[in-house]
Image (cartoon, rainbow, N blue to C red; front, side):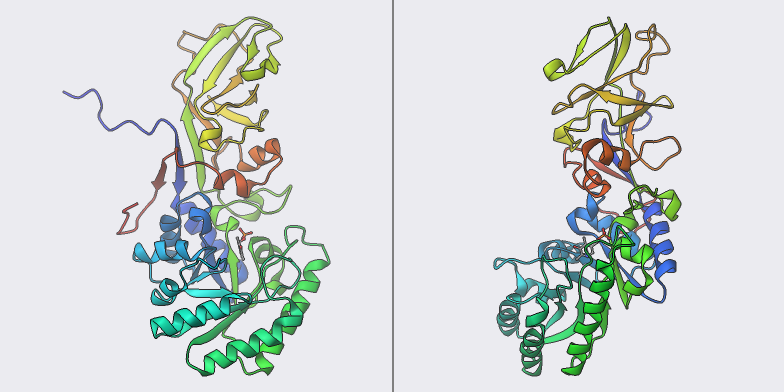
Amino acid sequence: MSFLAEPPAAERRVEVDLDAVRHNIRHIADVVSPARVMAVVKADGYGHGARQVARAALESGAAWLGVAHIAEALDLREAGIEAPILAWLHTVDSDFGAAIRDGIDIGVSGWELDYVVAAARRQQRPARVQLKIDTGLGRNGCPPELWDTLIGRALEQQDAGLLRVVGVFSHLAVADEPDRHETDDQVRRFRAAIAVAEDAGVDVELRHLANTPGALSRPDTHFDLVRVGLGIYGLSPFHGQSSQALGLRPAMRFVTSVANCKEVPAGQGVSYGLSYRTTHPTTLALIPVGYADGVPRVATGAPVLVDGHQYPVVGRIAMDQLVIDLQTTGIAGTARSPLGHPAVLFGGGAGEPSADAWADASGSINYEIVTRISGRVPRTYLNDTSASADQ
Ligand SMILES: *Cc1c(COP(=O)(O)O)cnc(C)c1O
């Protein structure tokens, strides 16, 4: 006889609802149609699991996958994913040969071109290249004054059969603030760069500029394809505007259970530094996740949902644990104790705190909250219908 009908749930876990991802992809595809959707799954799918998210996104209408690193693209190929993939952030140590071998599009801002050409020569196969113009963000991308030179060099290698220029792209800087004029400037510079490429004889099959905020707020940034990350995970890129207001469903839920519950007197100090002291007799609940799990150490005050109520984190967040003050007495050790009950740090369900609340409490953004949950926390998947639900 077994005491356990089924294996116990992981003590702390990130649950990723792939139906939410599918819903978000369909919603965004609707909004941007006839432009198509590139699902951005860099950084292990913003912490959600790149392989699982990629499959769900492709099932529900995404046409492309986008990643920062070639290594991230190779991992998707290794998982058997054959969709078009673009990788855009390289170093001199990037494996351009493997990218060419695996049919991965390579974003090129300048110096990469020589490396890509050398790798294509070794592979005896032309590289697929997308040229990136810096329209104002000031990170990667070819400066506008060098653009026609880069186009000329790329066309020379294309004529030599070593590469094919498939697309032209750029990245937005302030689209999360839809009224800022700099986005207008970026759109103008992007159009000019495309014109230069076309006049030089490039057959520009794919033009793309928009990220999630551009896709959701600026139709003039849509072009042929939008590169959407945050939105497919169901999070809002706009401060003060919720996922729900945008028609998106948060896909990630970070849940554990109350690990201890005890009554304390007034004046009880809580956690390292004793920066919090109870003002009256109360009950403390211990939540067994901390900064080693990716909870921001500075997020004191952020909400945790227990038994239908949200309680703020009190005192310092430690490596493995944090504390909430239940502001009540007489429940520890009774049937009303929350010991063992679910504790939700954030999720998309009714009454659950949002990743945005954790972002606000830590002076950060929801992007960082979901992406930083560490490998110590296992991911589990809801609605994983993919035939190859391996990992
Ligand atoms: C990360 C990234 C995106 C996705 O941005 P979101 O705001 O998450 O949609 C798009 N393009 C590039 C170049 C990126 O680095």
